[in-house]
Length: 149
Ligand code: ZN
Image (tube, rainbow, N blue to C red; front, side):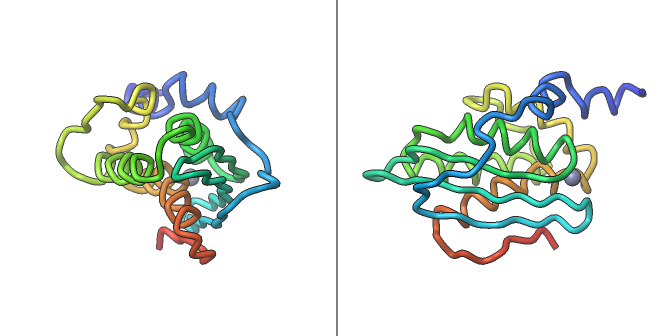
Protein backbone atom coordinates (compact mmCIF):
# COMPACT_ATOMS: atom_id res chain seq x y z
CA UNK A 1 0.00 0.00 0.00
CA UNK A 2 1.53 3.34 -0.94
CA UNK A 3 1.76 6.28 1.42
CA UNK A 4 -1.20 8.12 -0.08
CA UNK A 5 -3.51 5.17 0.33
CA UNK A 6 -2.32 4.62 3.86
CA UNK A 7 -3.24 8.20 4.46
CA UNK A 8 -6.68 7.65 2.96
CA UNK A 9 -7.38 4.51 4.93
CA UNK A 10 -6.19 5.71 8.28
CA UNK A 11 -6.62 3.25 11.10
CA UNK A 12 -9.47 5.26 12.58
CA UNK A 13 -11.45 4.93 9.35
CA UNK A 14 -10.86 1.20 9.19
CA UNK A 15 -11.90 0.85 12.81
CA UNK A 16 -15.20 2.72 12.29
CA UNK A 17 -15.86 0.60 9.22
CA UNK A 18 -15.37 -2.58 11.25
CA UNK A 19 -17.59 -1.46 14.11
CA UNK A 20 -19.88 1.38 13.04
CA UNK A 21 -21.40 3.46 15.83
CA UNK A 22 -25.13 4.20 15.94
CA UNK A 23 -25.90 1.89 13.08
CA UNK A 24 -29.45 0.63 12.67
CA UNK A 25 -32.98 1.92 12.54
CA UNK A 26 -34.42 4.57 14.85
CA UNK A 27 -37.97 3.55 15.64
CA UNK A 28 -39.15 6.96 16.81
CA UNK A 29 -37.36 9.07 14.21
CA UNK A 30 -38.77 12.50 13.38
CA UNK A 31 -37.01 12.60 10.02
CA UNK A 32 -35.26 10.32 7.59
CA UNK A 33 -33.59 10.55 4.22
CA UNK A 34 -31.85 8.29 1.77
CA UNK A 35 -28.54 9.02 0.11
CA UNK A 36 -27.08 7.50 -3.01
CA UNK A 37 -23.59 7.80 -4.45
CA UNK A 38 -23.87 5.94 -7.76
CA UNK A 39 -20.25 6.59 -8.63
CA UNK A 40 -19.08 4.25 -5.88
CA UNK A 41 -22.29 2.34 -5.11
CA UNK A 42 -22.70 3.77 -1.61
CA UNK A 43 -26.19 3.95 -0.15
CA UNK A 44 -27.10 5.35 3.23
CA UNK A 45 -30.30 5.94 5.17
CA UNK A 46 -30.13 8.44 8.01
CA UNK A 47 -32.73 8.66 10.78
CA UNK A 48 -32.87 11.58 13.19
CA UNK A 49 -34.97 12.31 16.23
CA UNK A 50 -35.24 16.00 17.04
CA UNK A 51 -36.47 16.99 20.48
CA UNK A 52 -36.84 20.61 21.54
CA UNK A 53 -34.41 21.83 18.91
CA UNK A 54 -31.75 19.21 19.69
CA UNK A 55 -30.54 16.23 17.73
CA UNK A 56 -31.58 13.75 20.41
CA UNK A 57 -30.57 10.73 18.36
CA UNK A 58 -29.23 9.90 14.93
CA UNK A 59 -28.74 6.50 13.35
CA UNK A 60 -27.75 5.28 9.95
CA UNK A 61 -27.93 2.19 7.82
CA UNK A 62 -25.29 2.05 5.11
CA UNK A 63 -24.09 -0.22 2.36
CA UNK A 64 -20.93 0.90 0.70
CA UNK A 65 -17.22 1.43 0.90
CA UNK A 66 -15.18 1.86 4.07
CA UNK A 67 -14.99 5.62 3.65
CA UNK A 68 -18.75 6.09 3.37
CA UNK A 69 -19.50 3.88 6.37
CA UNK A 70 -16.76 5.33 8.56
CA UNK A 71 -17.85 8.87 7.71
CA UNK A 72 -21.48 8.08 8.60
CA UNK A 73 -20.37 6.45 11.85
CA UNK A 74 -18.18 9.40 12.85
CA UNK A 75 -20.94 11.80 11.84
CA UNK A 76 -23.44 10.26 14.24
CA UNK A 77 -20.96 10.61 17.09
CA UNK A 78 -20.12 14.19 16.13
CA UNK A 79 -23.69 15.45 15.72
CA UNK A 80 -25.68 13.61 18.38
CA UNK A 81 -26.60 15.96 21.20
CA UNK A 82 -25.96 19.14 19.23
CA UNK A 83 -28.66 21.70 18.62
CA UNK A 84 -30.21 21.47 15.15
CA UNK A 85 -28.52 24.78 14.26
CA UNK A 86 -25.09 23.61 15.43
CA UNK A 87 -25.46 20.24 13.71
CA UNK A 88 -26.43 21.91 10.41
CA UNK A 89 -23.53 24.29 10.76
CA UNK A 90 -21.06 21.50 11.58
CA UNK A 91 -22.28 19.51 8.54
CA UNK A 92 -21.86 22.48 6.24
CA UNK A 93 -18.36 23.14 7.57
CA UNK A 94 -17.35 19.50 7.22
CA UNK A 95 -18.56 19.32 3.61
CA UNK A 96 -16.94 22.67 2.80
CA UNK A 97 -13.72 21.49 4.42
CA UNK A 98 -13.54 18.45 2.18
CA UNK A 99 -14.58 20.18 -1.01
CA UNK A 100 -12.67 23.45 -0.79
CA UNK A 101 -9.05 23.90 -1.69
CA UNK A 102 -8.29 25.65 1.55
CA UNK A 103 -6.74 23.74 4.40
CA UNK A 104 -9.34 21.88 6.43
CA UNK A 105 -10.26 23.56 9.66
CA UNK A 106 -9.54 20.80 12.13
CA UNK A 107 -10.87 22.76 15.09
CA UNK A 108 -13.61 20.87 16.82
CA UNK A 109 -13.58 18.15 14.20
CA UNK A 110 -11.78 15.68 16.46
CA UNK A 111 -11.28 12.37 14.75
CA UNK A 112 -13.18 13.63 11.70
CA UNK A 113 -9.88 15.15 10.68
CA UNK A 114 -8.94 11.57 9.74
CA UNK A 115 -11.25 11.96 6.77
CA UNK A 116 -9.34 14.91 5.40
CA UNK A 117 -7.11 12.40 3.55
CA UNK A 118 -9.88 11.92 0.97
CA UNK A 119 -9.34 15.45 -0.34
CA UNK A 120 -6.58 14.09 -2.54
CA UNK A 121 -9.10 11.70 -4.12
CA UNK A 122 -12.01 13.73 -5.53
CA UNK A 123 -14.15 10.66 -6.25
CA UNK A 124 -13.87 9.59 -2.60
CA UNK A 125 -14.93 13.00 -1.33
CA UNK A 126 -18.45 12.02 -2.41
CA UNK A 127 -18.16 8.86 -0.31
CA UNK A 128 -17.16 10.92 2.71
CA UNK A 129 -19.80 13.64 2.34
CA UNK A 130 -22.78 11.43 1.38
CA UNK A 131 -23.98 10.76 4.94
CA UNK A 132 -23.67 14.44 5.85
CA UNK A 133 -25.79 15.61 2.92
CA UNK A 134 -28.27 12.90 3.81
CA UNK A 135 -28.33 13.99 7.45
CA UNK A 136 -29.23 17.54 6.39
CA UNK A 137 -32.04 16.20 4.20
CA UNK A 138 -33.31 14.12 7.14
CA UNK A 139 -33.31 17.22 9.36
CA UNK A 140 -35.24 19.15 6.76
CA UNK A 141 -37.62 16.23 6.40
CA UNK A 142 -37.57 16.55 2.65
CA UNK A 143 -37.92 12.78 2.24
CA UNK A 144 -36.24 12.99 -1.12
CA UNK A 145 -33.28 10.89 -2.12
CA UNK A 146 -29.99 12.74 -1.97
CA UNK A 147 -27.65 11.92 -4.79
CA UNK A 148 -24.06 12.97 -5.31
CA UNK A 149 -24.53 13.09 -9.08
ZN1 ZN B 1 -17.69 5.01 -1.59
